[in-house]
Amino acid sequence: MRNIRMAISYDGTTYYGFQTQPIGNTVQDVLLQAIRVLTGEHVDMTASGRTDAGVHARRQVINFKTSSPIPVDRWALALNSRLPDDIVVLQADEVPPHFHASYFAKRKTYRYGIDTSKFGNVFERKYRLHYPMPLLLEEMKAAIACVKGKHDFTSFASKRSTKTTHVRTILDARIEETDGKLDIFLTGDGFLYNMVRIIVGTLLWVGEGKLSAADFKRILETRDRSAAGPTAMAHGLMLWDVEYDD
Amino acid sequence: MRNIRMAISYDGTTYYGFQTQPIGNTVQDVLLQAIRVLTGEHVDMTASGRTDAGVHARRQVINFKTSSPIPVDRWALALNSRLPDDIVVLQADEVPPHFHASYFAKRKTYRYGIDTSKFGNVFERKYRLHYPMPLLLEEMKAAIACVKGKHDFTSFASKRSTKTTHVRTILDARIEETDGKLDIFLTGDGFLYNMVRIIVGTLLWVGEGKLSAADFKRILETRDRSAAGPTAMAHGLMLWDVEYDD
Image (cartoon, rainbow over all chains, first blue to last red):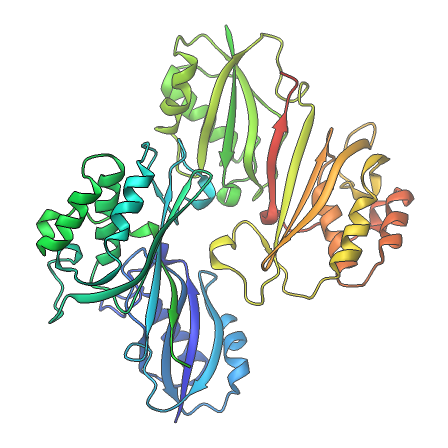
């Protein structure tokens, strides 16, 4: 059996998230079906992590084992011709048998996109939260700087999180501003359920002046989800990149 | 009666073009319906020009006469709350009674977007032609420079054009290249039916080496549609801007 790794990109708008669900209609279901049509095999697929319903991926990484003799440089083209136009295989390579897309992931980056223009850009409406209020950008930057480093992120994790520890290390956190847009980038060794969306929902309260950067820091230290802001909507979130040590 | 001018933006993916058709489902039909719901009036609407089925507008300009007392600064918000999310009113102002969005338009700019990446960017798939072939960019730039100035564009007009003259003046023509993308911008005093799409279809033949820039120039001078390349697909075309002298 060969272990195939693929980088994929998808527009999550119409899917119930990445991971297979009993109800169907997930990105993984569509990928598995395309692989079945191509190879005749029912493979087991592992992703670097799940993405929720409506969340996008600029670059997600998956792996699966296969007996198919298809050369590694043909997988992307062969699958793309069998996939709908909102899921694309960017690249495929063969990795050692023990490689696992989730356990081996060293760093992940998410981007949360905000459209601050008055009436919203119609061409980005599915990929950015429209938030036309004036925002205190410097205060938001001061707040997001607090998440850098190793912290217990319980305040910014869904209460449905089942992880034994909520300690994660954020390697980079920054806000980029361009004409009518904010891009919030977070890079870390791992993320808890809804973590980016809760950080962004709380940051937007800072932007509106409902909280200060000092309040944001206290919320992080409180380790209590109910102290933080709301979970920002799914469609602004995009898994930006996943990095491995190879 | 007041004469209201509005700048609008739309994602043309699901519409049969801008202008009202017997079959319905046009951008204009949707706008007229929203104005009817808001004011109770059946207005006559004029646009700077039509856009075809599947063509987008970053900034289209329309005008219509109304007896409605709604203040001009409330029109955008009032209509946006009654429009689907793929049509947005960006701005409204009141103009003199003789203003006409088509006759008064001085310059129009179109952008044709091309995605040259190997498997295509899923997030721009509705707004760019996916064309993963290697392209001779310098030759394309030499070719597009030929359309600048005043020419008879019969070679680059649909045979269905009913205009009495095919002479138009192109004020600016350029290609911008960014990572995996080409943006072709054309600014002119007016455009013939399918003109941008036929210029782009012919430019892509230049890019592939099927024609040289000198061939492109000869095609323009021939004044014969059958000498030119194919009409590039609609979804890559976007009405970028319309300018008036005021």
